[in-house]
Amino acid sequence: MRTEPVVVAVLVLVSSLGGVPAAAADQSADATLTVSVVTESGAGVGDATVNATWDGGQTVVQTAGNGKAFVDVPEGADVSLSVESDEYIRNLPRVVEDASTREVTVEVAPKGKLTVAVNDQQGSVEDARVRVQTNQGTVVTGRTSADGTFTTPDIEQGEYVVELFKAGYYRNLTRQTVGESTLLDVSMRRGTTNVQFEVVDDNFSPPRTVSEARVEITDIGTQRLTAGTVTFTVPVNTRYTVTAKQDGYQSNETTIFVRENGEARTLAINREPRLDLSVASGRVVVGETVQVTVRSAYDERVEGVTIEVDGESVATTGPDGTADVPVESAGEVTIVASADGVTSNETVVQGVTTATESEGTDEPTATATDDGFSSDDLPVDVDQPGFTPVAAVVALLAVTLLARRRQ
Image 1 (cartoon, rainbow, N blue to C red):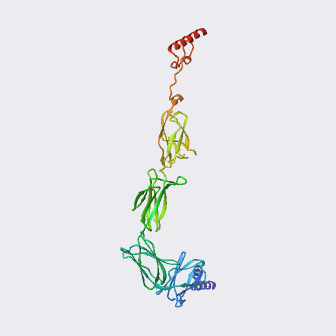
Image 2 (image 1 turned 180 degrees about the vertical axis):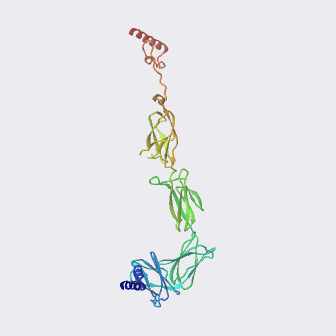
Image 3 (image 1 turned 90 degrees about the horizontal axis):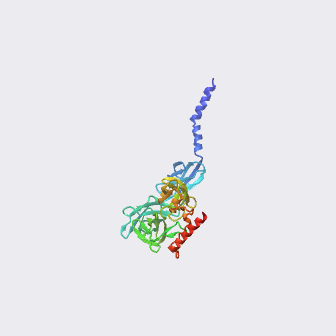
């Protein structure tokens, strides 16, 4: 009877000590990083915020007066440590790969700010892209406002390269030391460059120039090729939409980025898809076949094309681009080829019931005479030189006498 109360008391004691949650907590925090936040001189920075992130998790801690903080993270994770305090900051996170319980030092620098003012010969330059970078990578990017200025958020005081970029202007790179609050005035310069285009048909090997083709650049203009090329003068560092055109060809629209140096571009276009159907004969005996040939816009024989007779599929072209098409009825039948949404010209073939009709000639039928001779046996070249009407009569009499002797 005393056993049950003892067991219950033990269970209550274990729960009150938090034994189960502690075990779960140990499983979720497998490694402890001892993070030391220090200045360039090695002095610890107290009350700094350490933001630790990893795939699927995050934690935030504060450093003690000696600049140290303990960060629990999953064992083996790649952990990114960002640090900031009232006076100090770190531009780029410190990355700890394959985390394990160990000490990690994160160096910070005094906070500073940079204001960039951009102008040209006409005044302030709005919407210029500003990139502030070190040899470790880009720290901050932004664009100038209507008054031509851009101010960074808090960054480390130190040396930077400031890159300015805008379409129609030459790129500008300036080295700048950033202090607590620094102003940088920069002048940008407009510029143009030449771009040469050639338009080719790359269906051929090597590609062939498409003479008289036209090249259009949106918002710039259109020019026709002369001597195989065309040249445009355009603003530098700008993205353009370019279209190559020619009658009988599919237009080719592409986007290019033109930098500061002259360059040459090749634009490829191909002929519009076309199927040309031809037949071996325009008259075919009913029940026989007629050979058809299908060629592309490049006069190449096309395989796998469906052949239809009066709207009904009857054959498919082989590797040589031909097919034997049956003609099943007399009169006109219409043959057409189609493939990939492209339809050929319609070709009409005459179906005939006899070979005589198909040849298109009327041969005279031989008739027998009373004396048993066929009319084919009689001389017919009466119009030949030297064969007079008198000679014809004599020949006829001779034939008649010969017939009587045979009787």
